[in-house]
Amino acid sequence: MAIDTSTSASAAPVAYGDLLERMRHASPLVQCITNYVAMNYAANILLAAGASPAMVHAPEEAGEFARLADAVTINIGTLSTHWLEGMRAAARTANETRKPWVLDPVAHFATGFRRKAVEDLLGLRPTIIRGNASEIMALAGLVSAGRGVDAGDSVEEAETAALALSRSTHAVVAVTGASDFVTDGSQAVRIGGGSALMPRVTAMGCALTCLVGAFAAAVPETPFLATVTALACFSAAGSRAEQESSGPGSFAWRFTDALAALDARALQAQTDKVIA
Ligand SMILES: Nc1ncnc2c1ncn2[C@@H]1O[C@H](COP(=O)(O)OP(=O)(O)O)[C@@H](O)[C@H]1O
Ligand SMILES: Cc1ncsc1CCOP(=O)(O)O
Ligand SMILES: [Mg+2]
Image (cartoon, rainbow, N blue to C red; front, side, top):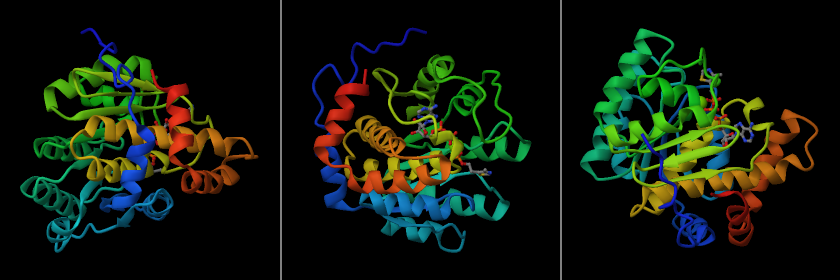
């Protein structure tokens, strides 16, 4: 299947900086159903970016809370039956109330329980799917080299799978890694930049999924550009944070600071450099 990047977002100049300002102005309430590993980091990343996170997953309230939220993000990283019920309830409410919801299928290929959970969640029609290359390849039915939460495949190897997955689910699909790939089934962009230290900090991808939710809420008319903008913010903050980091520990907090300090002009400069 051919991948057409000639209709990419870069064909007409996109004001990514304005989309960042819109997100900050709206400060969307994002209901993040994420894993125990990611909860604290992801909440701090959303606050740094200018959104408002709420980690609400219990089945007794997740559906009700989704009525208040501007977007929902669902991540199966530390899954249990109880959590899955909450995820389904929140996704259903998001659909009923026409709000975007984002799926992060962490290591969904690893066990039968995860595979079944993701099948159920895909049936609830996510607006956006964000995963690493191994997760996206396996979701499209290909053999992947992934074993756990970290990718074993390259983004380039996952591009065709991402396109097929987007066409079959009608979701925007984002594959992340050394460079990222985003498609809505008819257009696609690649995003470079970031830092090799990013995969050495746990929950970076999970936090990014939550930020994708924030942009999807603030830019509802185009989940594709909302996703690209969230990924571009990570690219810019990653490149900046790397400059003064001495390892994954200092990188993690410098990244939070860099995301908070990122302004429209710096984001626009980064996108001019790294989006193709
Ligand atoms: N080698 C790398 N170089 C630059 N950025 C990277 C690299 N690996 C991952 N990233 C970035 O880290 C973030 C999380 O992506 P990824 O590591 O693929 O997710 P996950 O944590 O779900 O496996 C994304 O913004 C991605 O662009
Ligand atoms: C280590 C780990 N184990 C279960 S979820 C999780 C976090 C994964 O985070 P990410 O997908 O962002 O690397
Ligand atoms: Mg992940």
